[in-house]
Image 1 (cartoon, rainbow over the protein chains, first blue to last red):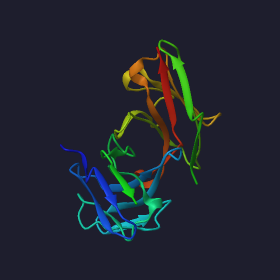
Image 2 (tube, chains in turn brown, green):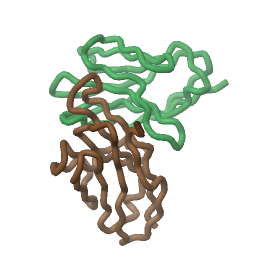
Image 3 (cartoon, chains in turn orange, red):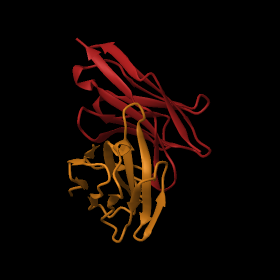
Image 4 (cartoon, chains in turn cyan, green):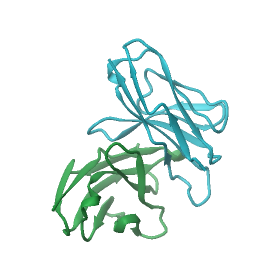
Length: 115
Length: 112
């Protein structure tokens, strides 16, 4: 199992550009989430999904869109990048039940810089 | 709403000394609690988790944490620090659908 994978690892954007951060998991987990990590603020939830076709906002959703057409994939779209979106982005998945219930499995992260 | 507070953004210990990283939480339902570790320029690795089975939870790398409901605390300890323990540590509480609310993080420095 590859677990949770994210691409790209690094990205530099100019203000106003759009892009999509990719996330995929091969563990058949129902729940998936996106977090951003900023110094001194821990990780904050951007958007999450409880299954294909179902998404909802987290704590800091502004400027981001998500969709979930399959169980495996959960892309995060930046509509018009701003310097305030410079951050490290983590995708995570978790199962709906079983021994790992409520445990988040994290991807390696994408480091994004917006100039 | 849930929240997590980690007391001390930086903790410094000598190699071989006790490590104590503090975490307090608030939750309206019985919580699932987690400690994650992040080494420089890497992702998050699960250290241990509390799921109500036992109040003292043992994790990887010699770490353990004790759930104290009366104090709403879940402090992380290790009897003897090693240089390789230098990292940032995050405490988190789980909500619905596996969503996590994180504390601000504590950077642990280990001196020789």
